[in-house]
Amino acid sequence: MQHQYDTYQGFRPVQRNNVYVHTCQSPHEASIAAFLTIAPNLSRDTVLFCSMGDYLHELYDLIVGFEPMPPSALVMFEEILGEPFHRASNERVYQERGFIDRVSKRGIPFYRILARSPTLMGTVRAFNSRVEELLMTYRRRHMFFELTPKGDLGGINPGYESNYECDGDIMDEFVVGLRLDDEVDSRRVTISFKTIDYASNIWVFAFGSNVDKALKSFVRGARREYNNFPVGYLHQTGKDIHVFTDRSV
Image 1 (cartoon, rainbow, N blue to C red):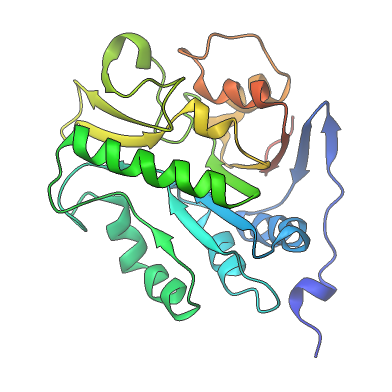
Image 2: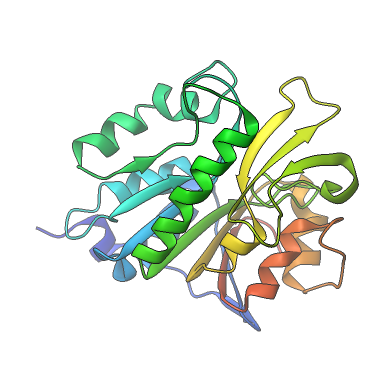
């Protein structure tokens, strides 16, 4: 029996240095194209670092459901601090979508961030140790991002140098904690630039007219300070970056 990933005609990307731009009509089409690109690289030595977003969930489902070889582990990498599965948490979204149950049924470890004693420092320290262990265990490390109009990088937002009080150094630790003064849910935990340096491949979804400016700036490799445009740091890694978008670049 042939599966969809055997028969679906993929897309030929346009390459600019280490950036491969895949033009797709919709997030659904992008999920299939991205899955076809990733599937040959899945193995028992693969870990996926999953950012939150509106468009990536279908791709995650396709990867987890890949019968020949699912990934060995999945890792959340941005979260709003609080008790496990609190109302504003990202893990609550994964739970309500049924994703945690699907991952569990496949026997794939899914590493979440929140703990029973949710101090920012304690959560950062515990998750920092976990991320370091996973980076040392798995050789193939795929990291997924969604481009935003402001150029956020996962949980690292523009202005992190002056606007946030950080637990953990964004360059020297694997995980950092951030306090956003102007947010109701002000305490956040996310992976750092140091963790992103360990990526084997980077996957970016960019959809909607509101990302036009950020997308063009990113693909062209415009020289901007990371504090003002964090997603620009991905170029610093020197790794292959696959961008899936419905916009013209």
